[in-house]
Figure 1 (tube, helix red, strand yellow):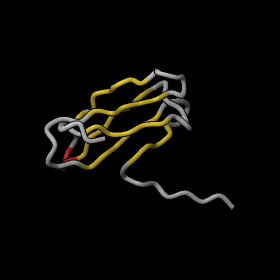
Figure 2 (cartoon, helix red, strand yellow):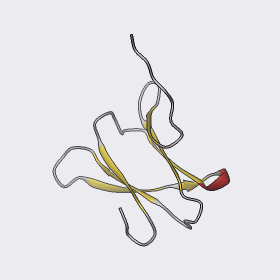
Figure 3 (cartoon, one colour):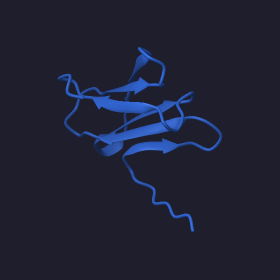
Length: 78
């Protein structure tokens, strides 16, 4: 039996390809996504876009399951 529950935050695989990343940070004036595609030293920073009600989103078409990621707050906290 396969069960899943969609969460409003974190990473969500998109049908076909890519990943959508979401974070609720209503006090932030900017956010970035740090993505590590598994190749040594291949970190990339992706700006996140503000959404309604304090949510932030970044869609990365070439991201895939298993890629490491973290959200980067304006003060540098990861």
